[in-house]
Amino acid sequence: MPDLQHVFAYVDAHRDEFLARLFAYLRQPSISAHKHGIGETAEHARGLLERAGLGGSRVVPTAGGPMVMAERLAAPGKPTVLIYGHYDVQPPDPLELWESPPFEPTIRGGKIYARGVGDNKGQHLAHILAIESLLASQAELPCNVKFLLEGEEEIGSPQMPPFVAAHREELRADLCVISDGTVDESGKACVRFGVRGVLSFELRARGAKRDLHSGHWGDVAPNPIWTLVQLLATMKGPDGRVLIEGFYDSVEPQTELEKQALALMEGDPEGIKRELGIDAFAPHPGGGVAERRSAWPAFTINGLHGGYGGAGSKTVLPCEAFAKCDIRMVERQSADEVWAKLRAHVARHAPSVELIRQGSMDPSKTPLDSPYAAPIQRALALTEGEEPMLHPAMGGSLPEYAFTKTLGIPCFGVPLANADEANHAPNENMEVERFFRGIKTAAAVLVELGQMRP
Ligand SMILES: [Zn+2]
Image 1: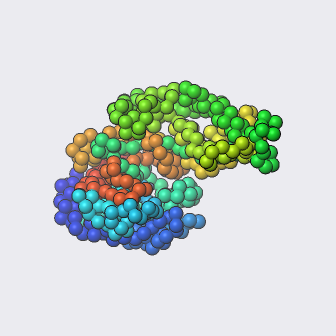
Image 2: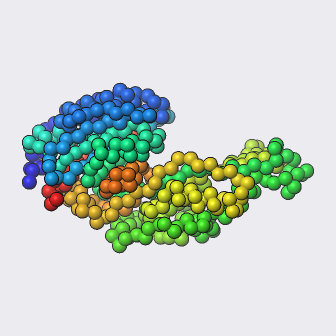
């Protein structure tokens, strides 16, 4: 058994140096939305992988931002872990709300403030520094490791699915570990087993070739806003049930383990209502808040536009209307399947309405009783001092299906950032101690996985 205490002591003895390395990485702006600093930061990340003792570190071009890869495969018979992260960040705007400049990392009150510290540089750097600490404390890594860092996660990972499909052999592994997002809202560590998928689309209705006088032409020429409102009303009932034919057919029932995990996640509904400023939750055919966010699909109208919205009144019959929507999907729904059902529904109920498909990501889920789950939970219990919570699936979406479906391997989210990391917002931060504990957790995960019987 490799001695984790030596590894932890190494981490403790190198805090200043590790922090300096994090700060240098954070000073590299890498804003994918503006294509700013991506190439330079990819090269910086490659250097970090090489310095940690990983081999074959390389920047691999794609049609978009480059991927950064490296590996160390020197533990025959042991599992191979693919570690994924992203080196790009969200734009820092609005700049005036930052208490210190976004690309000048600053410590205040035990937290590191900088754009990208939690999302995601600090989190994947913790894994890289864990490799370095393991190699400094013992001759070899306890299992085989591959790294994949992408540079376009914050713009929807357009290159990930084709890249993973085209590099199946290079990326072949037994499991994938992703440290992104935050620990449980309670502050407890958690293991995340899945994500919901997303399908965005737009509905466009048109009436006459120009806006008309509502007194002269109302109820003579079709009103595209009524067309959309009535179409939307056929898509979801007052009880919250989605009425698109066959919509729930492929939803996989929750396992007993998932039901238990979700029951433990149900927090305080009254507190959630107060926090959101609502008197009641939306009508829904299912259960509690955690169950809705994890185990049910959701159909949201993001925007409904058309006609006059200015001061006073305007007796107009508008000539066009738009609705933007997204559907969050759960395992085993897929974007293509839901899209086909949606098309059939619109064709049946409002054939004149144009339906435009936008971005999508499929859902992903790994079974809670995967053989790799217990070692990961043990590692977290060791560094956190308590058993982690188990999150069957996150409400939001990430391209994890590229790993679970394209590579066919289980995928585990091991978030290291505090729940109030303010990712995507001004004053993004990560607690200093969570960064160092993250390095220890990442090392413990590899050690525990290395103990598994083949
Ligand atoms: Zn993000």
